[in-house]
Image (cartoon, rainbow, N blue to C red):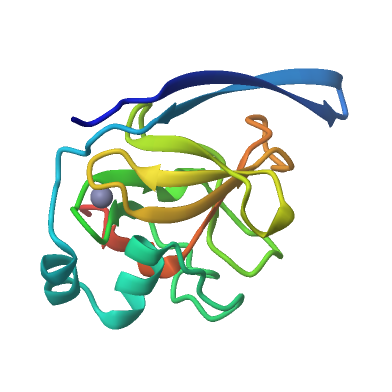
Length: 165
Ligand SMILES: [Zn+2]
């Protein structure tokens, strides 16, 4: 019997812009549910590179400034490297000094799941693909754009496809 734990946390994020105080909210849906794409560890290992497996399935983090999409700004869409679900567009990508590809929003609501992460003595919000549960990175409330959010994503978690010309 699988026990589902459903917690809905609303975190109020306050950001300051030059126009004054702006308030954004992120809904955090911590749901210990099953994902529609289910594979065994063996199947994931066969379908991913060892580096991708480590990040997506073991919540690893690529070293900063090493990812192929860190300073990459072609027009197109970023898909989950685990299951192919669309996650981000290049329009939401911004230049960040953090060392990882950074986006200010997901491609559409529901494609990313937000999970409370208390590991390493920090309170963070982990972002995972809503279809396969693959670890993408974390989201922070210090983004420089109007959304106030910074989706800090491992290049290894995503595959870029160029927009049609
Ligand atoms: Zn996925």
